[in-house]
Length: 190
Image (cartoon, rainbow, N blue to C red; front, side, top):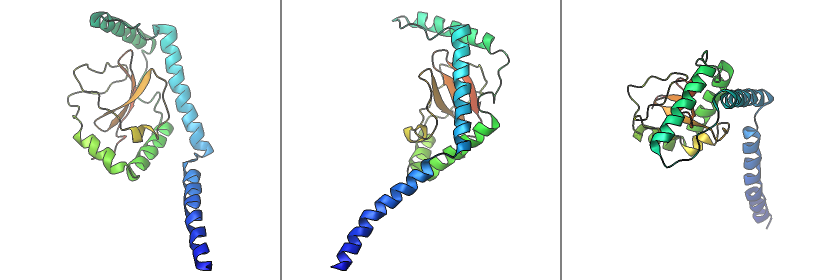
């Protein structure tokens, strides 16, 4: 009888202990929280600058030509407002280090093999050099980013998205179709 109670107690306690350990690991340190807060501030500063100097996303329209024209105009204004922008303005060395560790941890988790397989099977992006304030070429595929990877990265405002280009992580302005910043070699070689 004692043996049955002990087995039940261990069975009940093990998931609770595992859950407590997982939640302890998932809780970011104060330094990590500070890095994420810095990243979020930089993203919000970009969006504030864009809104103040370039406007907002184009209004919905049925005209592809009108949409393209307003997108190009928005991109042009953003480039003028961010004339001195360069790689690393948002992905600073500290933020890059945090993102690399977070991404590496994602690849070593349960979904890591699936994410790598997905990236290997995605259409490669060739002949395209990333450039801050550069337009993401319309004829180059927008490789989707695995949801399990996105779940571990800081969330973005609806105006921006993460994209993977080869092994680099891109911060993409959807409405302006601009590369806001990028992190070289974010994804390990597959």
